[in-house]
Length: 126
Length: 107
Image (cartoon, rainbow over all chains, first blue to last red; front, top):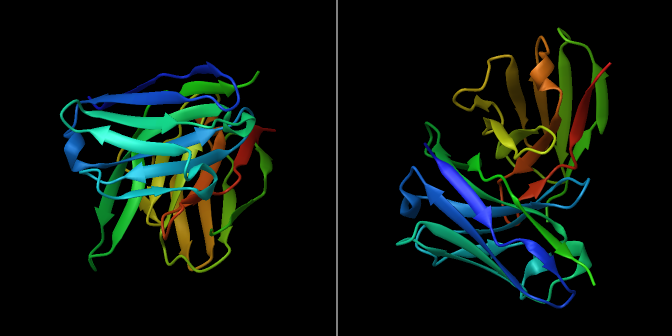
């Protein structure tokens, strides 16, 4: 059974740091891209960042560039999000998700997120 | 970044109804689009990828269509468990962007 379990959330002051973890099991972690998505209280989903299978490619949304770093440890089947210089607007539930690639008959690739964790809440407040 | 705009933002319907949610991209994204369902307090669930391909295990009453800039998610014969919020997500380029969501409520 595929499982993703986030941890590391909590209350942090503005300007502070936090490291989120996503422990995975039930699949070959090193065979998948992984993604972080967040959701501010009462708001919609926001894509945050993703990382390729060996950690050599990273993409992130502009609002977190230079502050958040996504990484992974394939030996431990774990995904991380190091967050620094936190702001009130970073307050959200943070989800990790498995990025599955589908290939159509013409060889085109499509990415989607087929398994998600339950989320971990990050609150940035003084 | 590509902007994804969903309509309506909310929708009231009854069990057994057929509903359609639309998603418009600010530029052409071929058919690089997925649809997700989120129930309150739960993680999102993948319904559709590549605009019209049904994810394994998702009931066939869900269907998607469209390409370029205009996409639709249709739910036939609404079931009680379908009342939730629905999001589109483009995977054409980075950063990936979600629509703002459509909340489907019981009439």
